[in-house]
View 1 (cartoon, rainbow, N blue to C red):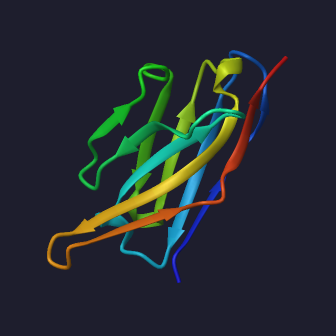
View 2: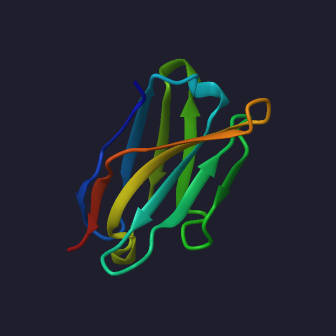
Length: 121
């Protein structure tokens, strides 16, 4: 059974930092591209950062220079270090794992339940 679980959210003041973690089980973690998405109230879910199985990263323009995504394949975990947080970063943050099997013509896509990040004074 595949499980994806986020942790590390909370309340932080503007300018502060948080580190989110996402642990996955039941999958060959190293072959998955992993991503962090967020959804603020009344808005669509958006990609925040993504890291490929090979370690290539990409970020939303709104978080470039402030957020860093990384992965530890030995621990089946992906991280999101968030610095210089702003009130507009407030959202539920979701972890996603994605893999496409060309041999099977099948996509594998898994989501966590989300963790709340609130940036407020």
